[in-house]
Length: 453
Ligand code: FA5
Ligand code: MG
Image 1 (tube, rainbow, N blue to C red):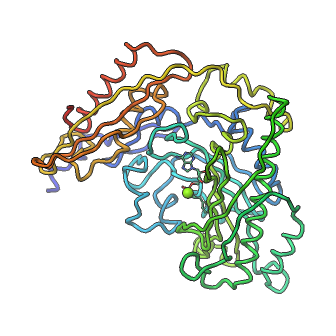
Image 2: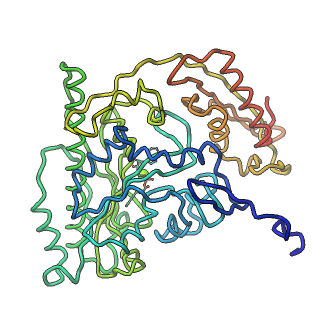
C-alpha cells in the first residue's frame, strides 16, 4: 500500500555519516558503530605501522612509473563496483548481508580492493597499478580474522595496439626476460590453463595466457622472496642465533568471477599452508567495460595482515589495531630504513578467560521483532560474532562453536559458543569478563531473539 510508506512527508530519510560523508540508509543498513568509527584509521599509510611497512616493501617490487601506486581510495563503494562490474552473479553468497556490510541497498563497505579494478583500468595511464586499502567483511573471530583488514590489488597490462605486430605473447616474454630470477622452491604442477578447471578466455591464445601466467607468477614470487629475505634479516637482528627454514611456496588453481585462468599462492608457514593471495588473467569483459578493449593483463589481491604477520612474527591480528606504545613503539623509524627491520617481541600474554553461552534458536514458525532474526532457517553465525565484537571489542580473542544439537521432539536447535576474553594489554578481572559476558548474553536475546539455556 503506497500510503503506508515509512518515507512519507514528515519522516526524514535515515542517514549515517561515514568518514566525511553522509549516506542515506535503508533496511539493508548493517554497519555497526564499532566498524563505522574505525573507518579512517588508514593503517596502511600510518608511518611506521607494520601494515604500512609491509605495503612499502611490496611496492618496492612493483616500482613506479610502470606501476602507479594508489593509497587513498574511499572504502564506501557501490554494489556495482564491488560485485556487478566484476561479474559476480546476483545470487553469489558474498553479496549476502551475513557476509557484507551494507550502508544501504546499493552501497557497501568494499569487501576487497578488486572493487576499484574497473575504474583503475579506465583511468590508468601507465602499464600497471597497485591499490592498497582497508576492506571489510563480516567474519569469524580468531587470531587471523578481523572484520577490517587490508589488501593490495596489483595489475599489469599490455595493449594489443601498442606492442609490435600486436603480438602480446612475445611482448610479455620479453618483459619476463627483464625480470630477475630467484632460487626459491616453488611447487607448481598446474598447466597454464585447463578446459574445465581453469579455462582459457575466449579471444586469448594459449601462448598469450601462458606468457601472462608466467609474468604474473614470476612477479609475485619475486615479491615473496623479498618479503622473506627481510623477514630473515629481522629474525637475525632480533635473535642472532636464529636458523631459518627453507622457504616453500606453491601455486594452486582457483576461481574468481573476474579472472580466468586463476591461481592462489600459498606459503608453508608454521607447519601449514597459508593462503596469501588470489590472482589471474583479467577477464576481457572488464577491459571492455572500462573502455580499453585492446588491453590484456593480469591482476592479484594480497592480504597485507597475513604478510605482516609472517614478516614481523605478529601472533594476533588484533595487535594491528593497538594504540599501545609497547606495540607501536617497536616499529619506530623502520619506515625510513626498510632494510633494518626487527621482529615483534611480545610484551606479555595475559591470562585467558573462557565463558560459554548456550541458547535455543527460535523455531522457524515464530519471528523475532528486531532487525536480525534468528529463526533456525536464517540464523547466521556472523551475527553472533558481531554481537560479541560490539560488546567486547578487542577484548575477545576468539569465539568457537563447542556444541550444536537439535531436540528430537521439538525440532528446536541449540547452540553453544565458547568466548575467550583476553586483553592484549592487561589482565582482565573475572568480574570484568563476567560483565562482558552478561552483556553478550543479553544482546543475543535482544537482537537475535534466542532463548538462553
Ligand atoms: C579476493 O579478495 C580477490 N579480490 C583477490 C583477487 C584479486 C583475485 C585480483 C584475482 C585478481 P580472497 O577473498 O581470497 O580474494 O582474498 C585475498 C586475500 O586476502 C587472501 O588470500 C588473504 O591473504 C586475504 N584475506 C582474505 N580474508 C581475510 C581475512 N578475513 N583476514 C585477513 N586476511 C584475509
Ligand atoms: Mg581466497
